[in-house]
Image: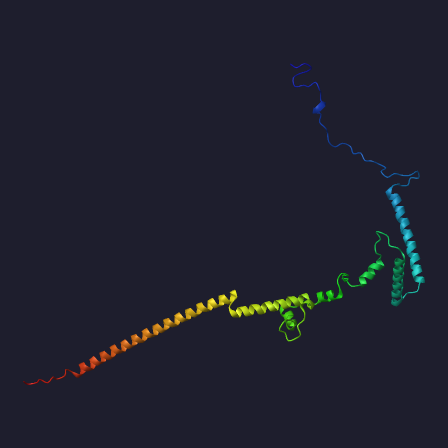
Length: 257
């Protein structure tokens, strides 16, 4: 038997790790959560915030009343007067901006932004000339149109030939394209180009096929004519035999010696 008590008993008693905790119990609520001052008034965000909000609302009401009184005292301006006043204000701001020296990091004012917005959306590039801008805005022309335009400028043209150095890049390219086209046309007519050689070979093959087809048809025609001729001769011979059989045997004269 274990010392200190009967079997199954523990020296630790009912405490220790075998203690069971109970749930529930009495409810304890905190009281006086809102701090009060000496007079018993509430302090904190609720009391002070309400007072500040009420004071700010009163100030705003006073300001709005003063502004409404000032607006009522001023005469109402017409549209032209408002536009003239805005223009004068804008000019004064521009003049003031021109008189002041720009410092690093300064941003453009609203008046300058409005002035820039009045200009074109896409300002012209200072590196481009007026002729370049006009050329860029003009629609591109095809090679044939350019060649027609410079047709009289080359050698053999009706007009006075223009020196190559005075031609523009587009005119030179059109002239070179026209000359290359003429050279290719002459070589093609002479049968020196690959396209012309291929065309000649194809035409030769077609001609040979046509000649062979014509010879075959001629041979078939001659063979058919020979067969028809032999058939007619056979029919004529058969008719002749039938006539002779219908006439009977011919009497032969017997000569006496």
